[in-house]
Image 1: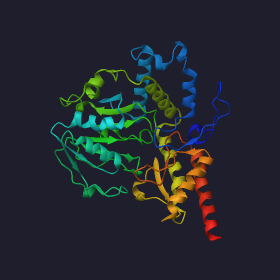
Image 2: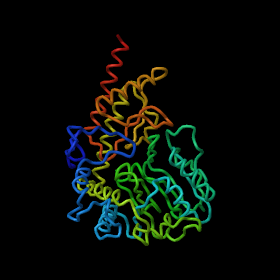
Image 3: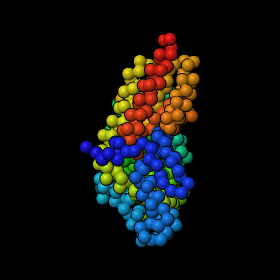
Image 4: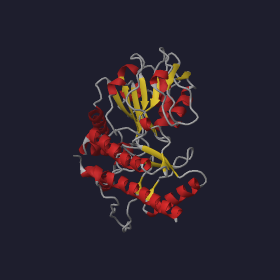
Amino acid sequence: MYSNACQEAPLSPTFGGPGNGDKKRVLNFSPGPAKIPEEVLLQAQKELLNYRGQGLGVMEMSHRSKEFEEIIAGAEKSVRDLLHVPDNYKVLFLQGGGAGQFASVPLNLMQSGSADYLVSGSWSAAAAKEAEKYGNVSLVVPKPSKFVTIPDQSTWKLNDKADYFYYCGNETVHGVEFQGVPDIPSHVPIVADISSSLMSQNVDVGKYGLLFGGAQKNIGPAGVTLVVVRDDLLGHARKECPSVWDYKVQSANTSLYNTPPCFNVYITALILQWIQKNGGLDAMEALSRQKSGLIYDVIDKSNGFYSSPVDRKYRSRMNIPFRIGTGEEQDQLETEFLAEAKKHRMLQLKGHRSVGGMRASLYNAVTVAETQLLADLMKEFQDRKTDSQQN
């Protein structure tokens, strides 16, 4: 159904070039910065010294040049085409990452001084804490001791006069993914951090006031932050908002108010084209469910050898945290598993330092074949450990 580039891409392509030898690429399950499609890296490698006959690379190119303006305009068009962005929304390529948007959102949108936040993990918690510097932040549900589920929307306490409602679509650290769009009064703009699910599924942009995401998960290297914001939310920045983070200023300058990270935008543009070429968001979503299903299937059929702490209803497609074993044996088993994975050139499977355990991140560039290899290793590891305990 979809291009083989997403399903059966070579697991360990060899990159040519002086001194590179036969070094193979690893299987990268990093939560971000994450794997970039090999096809994109090869094109960037080809154009590194001489971008399309210009005699210089994109890193050396003026952001005011015709060539770069075509790159960033092409990236915007790809975003609009992939997400079906309505005409009354602006698409911005900014800097500062998600953490920068934690401040930018209240600086631009908190007009009356209050906002509602759904805290479902560490990133939405950090966003709420940052927003408290600029006004009153109301948590629509009490902050839990562990982030493993999301309370039913019928229990949320919403402020009808809030300037906006904020949530994180997919919590990268805890593997909690909100399903669908929150049911919020229509006059309250919905703001969503979709950093780790960006371009992995279709999104009804028209139901949101603002969407943002760091590129370093699914659409590029670290250094680019995509913002999609509705026109009526522009022009209300607080006095203390720096111009570089004023959405109206950046929009008026087509994201070129200050020098952007040109090479990073170029890579993002290439990845967006790669997504389009390989079936668009329908394909990315179907493949993400297929890949995550392979890992969850191993966990659920392991008779408790592997365990997922997250409520099944809110399990993430992108980031799968899991533990191995129980009690005193847990740390030893997880250390052994990481060592075994490294022998098979599988890296970045250790869980976030704040929660421990394991975490497999399955962004768009991770193939089905690579995910299957991880699933096979998990099954083989369980079989070996179970046999040793029985003997």
